Image (cartoon, rainbow, N blue to C red):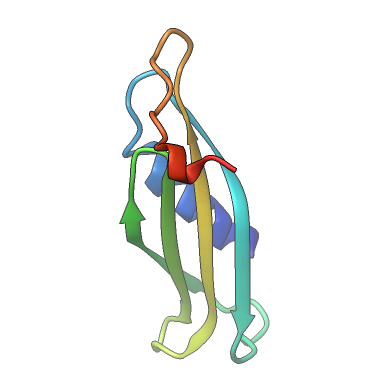
Length: 95
């Protein structure tokens, strides 16, 4: 799960504006099958949504022979850098 979280965070970082940071606000992993001891796992992170304030990533963890081991979906909050304008929210989005 830590490997999948790292991949999603790195994908977000690669898409950030200069000075912005990110933090994981939600992560869910489904463990589908066990991996053999000492098996090499392959992680493939795909963006589901790349917005200004939220990015969602899906990471598939497989063995070298392609068997699915785990599926992770995580949400990354994008925090603007210092001095950058905060994203505007519509009145309907404020609770």
